[in-house]
Length: 234
Image (cartoon, rainbow, N blue to C red; front, side, top):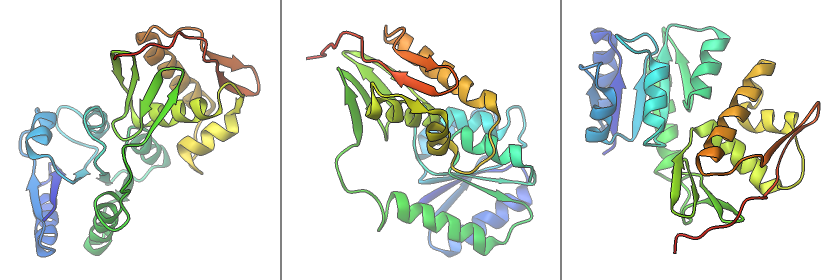
């Protein structure tokens, strides 16, 4: 039995989702306290999260970011906001899929089952934890965490993918087009979005004492020069 967490402030929609999920033999829990979603997530430890955007106090984008700091479990947005940028923002903040309202319950269930198979079932990876290492710097791809010696810093999903791409090709140049394709597939992204993510990665590296390693090659792309001192936590 899987546990599905429903973060939806419309009781009618939350109730219908809960009913359909339980018909499949899984457990569904609806959030009632919208001030402490992260704490409820920690207690519940769900396998999948269904998340609305328009919520009391903080929106779904905020709660998606908070969950992503502690978990990689699948997050599916369900929202009446059907604009392109709403969907881009959801994916950029860590979501795995986006469903617009009004929706067919069969489609929602199919997407939930697909995520369960991908992460926990037939299609789930059975190998040891995936990571990328470069000169003592380690990025844990499932944990969304970067480590150097005894120092660790949490990453977002996009920061993890960006660092993985740069580390795998270091010290070679990685074009902007290649990075955009890795991060957003075919989604529309404005020119400033990549620069913002590069700035965030620089800050994460700086927290580990790594400065001036991520270089911008104007008009071409970026490269990671492994000029930091390797350290060991052993």
